[in-house]
Length: 109
Image (cartoon, rainbow, N blue to C red):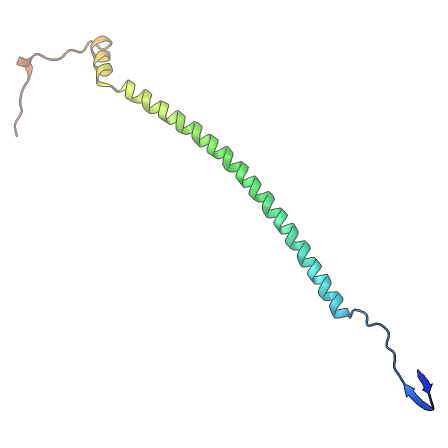
């Protein structure tokens, strides 16, 4: 394009407005895919964390019940194995008696 001003010729060039280059478009597309991938990864890891936490709570509840059962069984075992009860069963149900002192024998090597 040329214009004339007072007898001189002036040449000016006009450029169309610069548009985004292909490299910039690809970079933006890659960044968008990376952001979306990261978002889905966060969603997946959050979901997995919640599932694992729910599983942990179930296992802890089961552990508590098993610990309670174990404590009850230990108490029952100590009750059944007490010296008083063993002696009572031996005398009452089995008819066992303590031998006389005269029947004791001391064995020495």
